[in-house]
Image 1 (tube, one colour):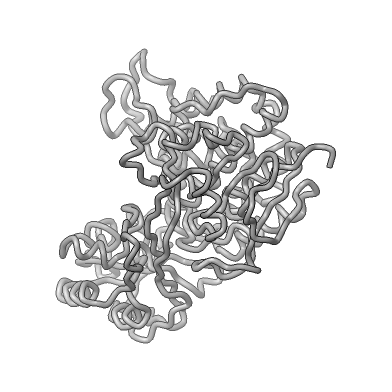
Image 2 (cartoon, one colour):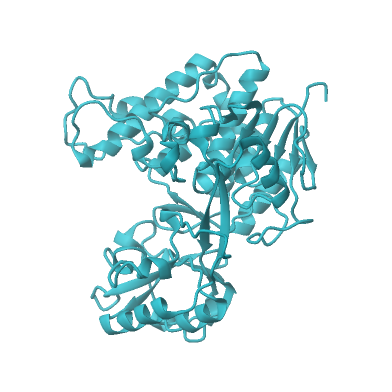
Length: 486
């Protein structure tokens, strides 16, 4: 290697995406991963990009912020999104994956690249030169000490929980019905366990009275609002679960009635042998989980492939320490990617790794590259990390609340279309200015052959119409999505 390698610590979604994007643009990479030699509390094996919580990358609707972010990433030949489409399982309007096929695809693609060298070790001291820390929310004790030395005591954490996975053969399918909310996807992408009022109230009582795993005495329990344990959610009120993960709206039982509440089960793999309890992340003791969850309709003999768990997730105070290119202000050669930055979720983690790679490529070429515009999904993520108030900083998934405000007054039902149209326009302009659009055909073809995804560009994936197509946009409004696609 005649060029100095970029050292990436952590081969999760952010690290794998970053390594791939650098390597396919000619930058050598040393990708460090401590698993399987040293495991984390949540991982099961040594594959790259192993999914430890849900198997969903959220909505694939191009007008949804998560769907928009996927399309922006695909414009740069994203490894993670390509692998997700290759490993997709039915999930209504979401992009969910068979987690084993997904991890196998990412692992094979990364390990096959001649410019990526795998280093199966725990990094306890920072390498020289350009370093990307993508150690994730389960950063090892040794690396946590390194970060503490770099950043001081402004180092935050919160508790996260993962949902149980159940063996399909152990379920009584006669007590369940197949349906997607509002008929999305194929219309029957989820299994649903229906509750009448009496059974729901009995389940609620068991849930709120069951024993939980308590944190250590010296640790403060600070849950991420977007991933609350189901029992924690239930303690906020008897109807809170019915307006959250157990909501019955949009679902009709085979007899034509609407249940009082439901629990949805999402397919975990292509074989349909395992199902995930959607929104049922839990910190109940394992014996309590079995006792309580076996009262769910159809679960009386349920066997669990994985129980719900709780673990401490680590992240930094990003507004204090990061700039918009994910560099540490105090040490610009060190960049942070993934959930340790304060982005939340698989999709957002991978997006940060992709962005860092593009910034590094430009820096190595001696070019000045402005950060992604705040009206794009990629730019909105770094905006959240750098412009939020440090005192109240919390991890966040991509959502339109992170984007730069739209100009003027726009009716609520029309806003998604305007946000998406502006994002496509700004990203295309940014790509044209910095020369990335010129590489799209070759990049997309390469990604398609390696990950099994279809060739994608920004314009091809732009939605064809706004959410309110009957409304005429004013002269000061963004161009329509049809104009962007054209």
